[in-house]
Length: 102
Image 1 (tube, helix red, strand yellow):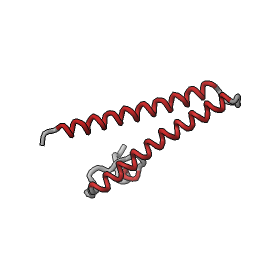
Image 2: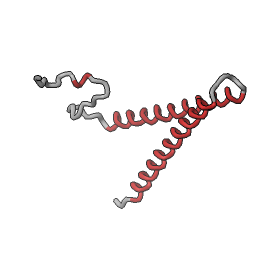
Image 3: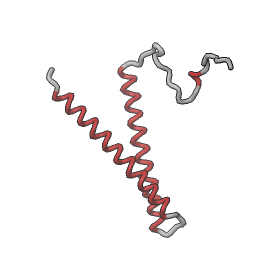
Image 4: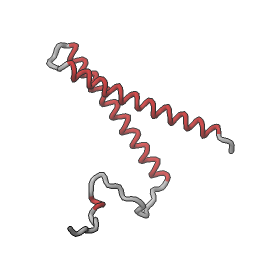
């Protein structure tokens, strides 16, 4: 069986090209990171809203399964807890940088 080189691997979804030669500016990196954080927080918010809606449907007696309500609530809780832990680590890192002698 012949082994062919992988020429089109850059077009595969999820495949990251390393060392493309083009480095983003600090402003672009900061903007990209900011948009990533905004998207992550928005996703947590969507999970919280979805959990609230499912809980409200359960309370009103609509046709929803209890286990689906509990799973949705747990997903929202885990997402919020993970976000809080990331926030705590960022604050801790910032405080450590501030304490560094110049």
